[in-house]
Length: 124
Image 1 (cartoon, rainbow, N blue to C red):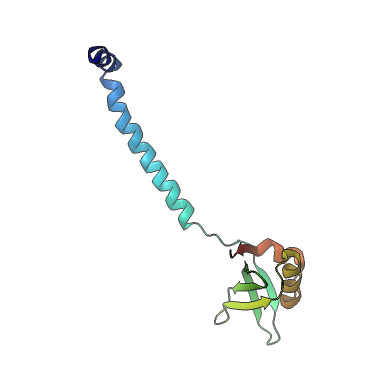
Image 2 (cartoon, one colour; image 1 turned 180 degrees about the vertical axis):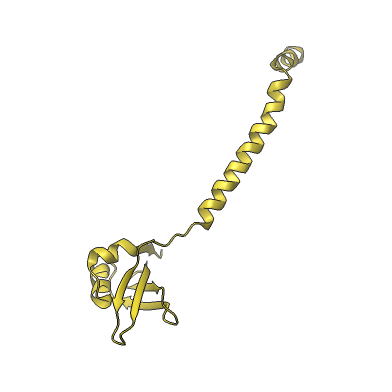
């Protein structure tokens, strides 16, 4: 029985066995490149919205992250301004529609603009 299997392996030829490491190396390089690209690309939205503040300066909203917990939500607003690069709010509800409505009201944006830059995370 071993004799037959050896004949089969030899019948595949040297080209087949040399091609396997080449294909494996190619798959390794491509998967490494794809992983690097996915991990280094920006996860933040390219869209930004400009707010007018009371001090005659402009605030640019880059993204909004919402962490939904059991009875309340923590909202973090990231801006492109220095030193005000991050704002945090707490809202007493967990419904995304209510959260977006409240964020829009606080920031003075429309609900659709808030929806475009908002990411949700649920704490379990």
